[in-house]
Image (cartoon, rainbow, N blue to C red):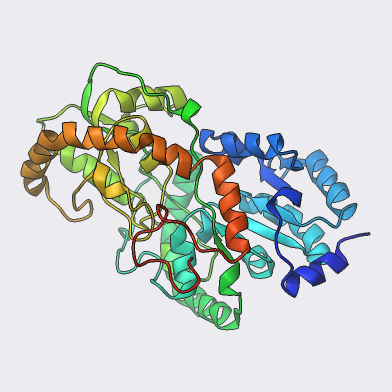
Length: 397
């Protein structure tokens, strides 16, 4: 069986080659529009892409096992669900020679992030936490407990687990501190791998205005927090509480037409785009954890400015298309004059969105993102446009 020699070489500094790697991807992740252009681009480049359709996909698992053991190629596990990673672990415990493409990095199975050769982060806050640039979430705190916004099995389970998770948090924090003390992951192998966006997915279409403000984003973000750089106190807390709260405060004013996703069924992509286009503003936050969600770029490319919060590390262009408000603390009364001012500025902010649109397609095309990964592996700094001024350190990451 192959793989052992290559893994040893990679551990000593062998560079990652995006185009020569085997990519293993989750079917659940690839069902989302934001990942389709990347998958299509990998296939167009002739890169081997293997898919696992959930942890119970025995046929897919066996195909992956045979393929990776028949090859010495590096493997990139991208966007995998924790249950899928647990099924793949017996393969890679022996083979090694893999890297991780991380979406919600704080949920990923720690064995994989510990043993990967490179970590590819969609969200720069994961790199910042490992580089000591700032704690995940900093001093921002979610409510101790909230019911789920929608009565799904998953939401109800997380809500029920929140209190036991709080009781277990002190012990888990000790374990996380020990894990951090044992880490020696090379900083130069922390790679920024932002979300891609494709023009064909967000066509610019004029629509009559139906809403002043629209929340088309989820307001329930509940996770099992596995990564040692994210606090155990966050287990099963609602990290999208800020979206929940700001939508409630705007609605309380009874002055505006507000679209609230909580009052509607799950939106398919076309409905998501149509509702956004029909709104003067999209309500936008990265969650209490200030994540670089793809929605920021999507809203801009749909020609719709945002009211909400900026994020600390990425998207230096965001400030030109967003009217900032305090989503966690502002009362409805405090928001009232701010929202009036936002609506007065809406035409200018929309023009900024339209002016920025083509640049975002250049910065975040799937081809450009894959090239960006390769450039960082080669030691090149990130170009302007991805991180806010002053974020990139001596390594340019």
